[in-house]
Length: 370
Ligand SMILES: C[S@@+](CC[C@H](N)C(=O)[O-])C[C@H]1O[C@@H](n2cnc3c(N)ncnc32)[C@H](O)[C@@H]1O
Image 1 (cartoon, rainbow, N blue to C red):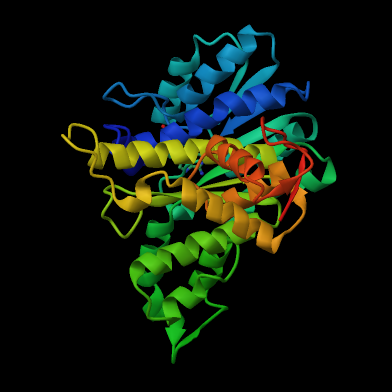
Image 2: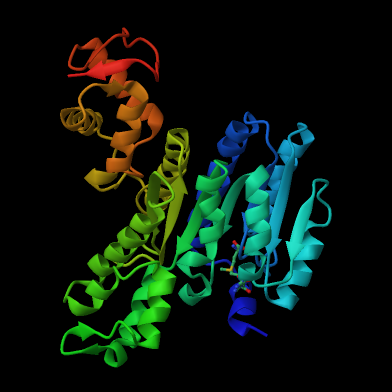
């Protein structure tokens, strides 16, 4: 029995609700949007767990199932595909999902063993993949590769939200440093190097072992490297560091999202902004006499305008939507799409941004330039 996995579900960690919030907040508008494609929808939880913690809190498969049930009631064709390796947790999962009325495929196996089956679904379904492992070594980058490859082969919509255990990864590779580094050179043929290259999806992490950087920077480099690898399949990649405390320089992990659709950027960013604001609010606002938020956590309309203008300085003559999406990608998890839209309107009305629309309402297809 995997005791770590069983213990994990005794009680939800204080930082997990922010991870759940992003998944939960994203799924509503995502499912509404992909329902318009009129294809069956499959939501995959690769590392499902039992669905409920011993303290009664619900986990990702039930968060997903609650959304899918609502879609199913509206006549949208949805399926859940939940994979859990540990038999004891799997039995609980089966019990916890049995009352749903839409189809749920549950697998008591390692998700690596069902990737071919998933790839088959990816040929005909719109697929959303959620992967939330307990240990970095449980998910090799290439495990999901054949699913992602269907993006190219069949042109289907596939999106992913991965919990990249950046801090655990760093700790693990620092632990093998003495075995794989000699004279400031990494032995690229060493079994350990090959293993961690496969988990990372590349060798970008080698630099972390050779350079003397602060741990916070190392973890950011890892999350950036992983995002770049995902960028080989997904045009749009956003990441969000989940911290235990606001002051922590090291996150527990990074949630990394990939999609080919600009509309998905608006939605996931909105979810990440919400998580960030709730996290900041719980530390600096909730239960306080005054709002004590640090300056960089307060919405600054002038900053939003500066960001938008600097996007246009680099990519002059674009559409309203791409101005918003590109600025979001440059400054993710900071401001929502409606805050960007409000400021695009003001900039057009004040003739700082030129456009073929008057700037009185949102017009995603309008042209904008300086
Ligand atoms: C972090 S937990 C998942 C938590 C879940 N997402 C939630 O929010 O409730 C990871 C789960 O993956 C399971 N697991 C580990 N390796 C696996 C694998 N290769 N395939 C499928 N499940 C695996 C563990 O037993 C554990 O239940």
